[in-house]
Amino acid sequence: MARIQAEDWLKAGLELLRDQGIDALRIDQLCARLKKTKGSFYHHFKDMNGYVGALLKRWGDLQTKAAIEVAETAADAKARMALLDETVRHLDHRLDQIIRSWALRDPRAAQALEDVDRTRIAYLKKLLLEAGVREDRAAFMAELEYIAFLGAQQRYPDMNTPKAKALADGMHQVLRAWHQQAIQDSAHEPERGVASL
Image 1: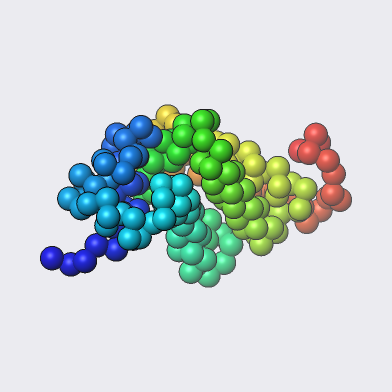
Image 2: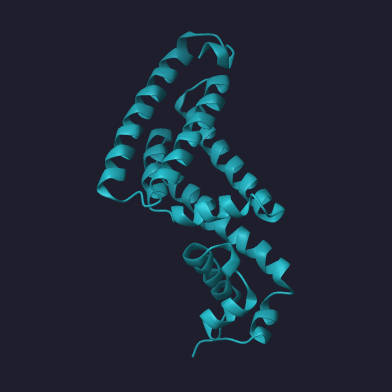
């Protein structure tokens, strides 16, 4: 049998969170899931607090950093937006829901969630700027687009059902048209406040 690694403990923790919720995230539950002893757990993690920190980082890497890295392989901003949309559709949205709920009662989860939200919005803004949208408008559009994503994520944790796909496709068409209009406006108008957008 292959020796268990820290990554195996983190994978088990994310599975527990997704399948059973926050209260299932206990050392005894983790040990039972992996059929390992607490000694094995403590070989990799100093304590539960250290484990939670590593788990939240792993969630951020899987659900945000990895998606951005995939999107960055595309040739230009428009292609990166399309690839990001497709990649994000296949994320574990149930897990995001659990972390967002956890953040209401745990400052560690709240900080991890804030970091992820900030990173996601910043990347959307970066893509809009690269596409030619003005700075003031790009910030507003990135925030609003992310809010729409969060609403879709809450309504359709499985974004791969036919209904969710159809709605996501429609939303993306609206957003792409909005992006195109913003790019055209940015080429002809001076910067102005969000209230005038």
